[in-house]
Amino acid sequence: MTTSHSQFGLTVNNQLADFINQQLLPGTGISEQHFWQGFADIIDDLSPINRQLLIKREDLQHQIDSYHVAHTHWDAAHYQQFLTDIGYLVAEPEDFCIETDNVEPEIAHTAGPQLVVPVSNARFALNAANARWGSLYDALYGTDVLSEEDGAEKGSTYNPVRGFKVMAYARQFLDKAIPLENGSHIESTNYSVVNGQLFITLRDSSQTGLKQPTQLVGFQGEAQNPT
Image (cartoon, rainbow, N blue to C red):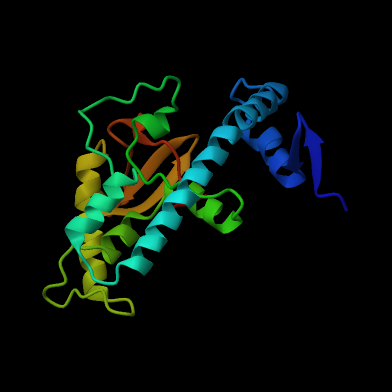
């Protein structure tokens, strides 16, 4: 069975093409031909530059490897000067602003992880795509945002004491970042998405929404029980 095909000078995996043509592009106003021709042009324009960068990286790595073979005694100042001499380290530039036009707001203005990975590794690419929608609970539990005092150690298994602190912190954070029209995230018992709007059920069984409904930009899982 053929798993790829050629178009615009590119060899494209059939599943990737189906995803882009059937799920990604509809609703964007970008035609299949415009997307694939533009993508092929980018590959054609930037591949020679990328090859030169890879050659430069390999040359730098070779010089660094040779340095460590020749200098078994560690001298931080000498090593720093060596890295500067070969162009691995450069002087810090003056403050500047990135002036690239037509950058998606999600990348240009929305804070969040942005992982750069080789597209040849499917697992890395999937992790990078999912990094934008990580778990606040996981981030709080596994980092030093919360202290490990008073029995709240991370440990090797789930610690309910730390878990309680995570939930309390997260809900207070949500009250500041995405406040509710009525009530508090601390009182929430259920979240659901109906017709593109987020509904929150509170302990008294009443329902409320976001004070600013436009703050809902996406969700994971099922609409009846998003995560």
